[in-house]
Length: 424
Ligand SMILES: [Zn+2]
Image (cartoon, rainbow, N blue to C red; front, side, top):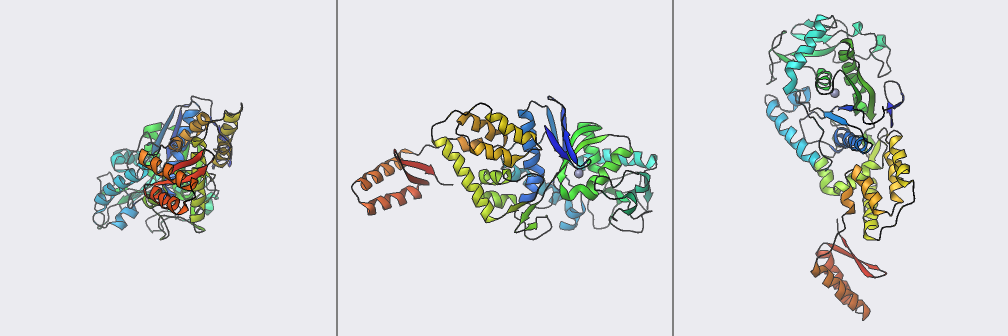
């Protein structure tokens, strides 16, 4: 199994099973209903990867954090950020549960790990990698020569982050922020009342649950700089080897534009699920390679719905045993940088129910294999319609078709008379 690594810009092999494989994925900042693009980045991709590695015989631990201390939350609910973060955490769990992919092994929150974060900041100050300034604490980028390597920037030309006069150097970034009057949550620290900056929580939580060195760190492409660059600096400055492979997924595009949480064009996961259903949405995500942008449009979702229907159709017909080597063709696609479109193309050729069900299970899509049986009254309507057609009473046949539709089923003409398919 190999994966593309942002840090070395190359494909990197995983150790042989069973690993263990520690995976840390940057999770959501909780201040609103999660958007569909963000749900792919923080839930679908890491859980699929975990499920596939499990299929290969790996022991995995997946940690996806919940950022419940952040400027965005303070801005969204001035004076009431704690309440909003609690509510939005619940929405996030509710909405992503509907994807039916299970949950990460650990979902730590920033709030629950503040003491650990203070401890790591103290260590960075003690060793000269950070300094206090007016109740804030900043990381001293000049002390870490590797800075900029992940994002491909020269250390002396790194982009400035959150400009402010309290920094020694414009490249420095905040580890701790002194409490501001409109911020309703704060913690005591050696530098006074305040709260951690955003980046430190991930260095702390990954180490707490996966140890100082782990296999995979993931997140959206938008996190490469500054977030992940800063995580590397914090952890490696203190001699933690940290992540071995860096995975960054491409962004979902909405009508050709990148879907960022801040833009008005975003669709929530709940809306996407209400409109398309989880099977269509998951199949849509399968059609894209995780490193590339994916276009979320009516046309691409409609095409995904048709794919789902094609797969359901396979299970309405007799199983045909696959030739030897078919599973390997599917696995080859996923072992080659988790290429889901390639694996999906292989699956679409299959008529072997057992094989297809096993592959669908990796992606939480084995529900497509559930053979739907129409209730007796719908079967009776379909029988009556067949009879009406036999005596060429097409008016009555059409009336019966409408009644079947109203009951939630589609009737299709087939060689053996008719076929009843649940409407979705
Ligand atoms: Zn992070």
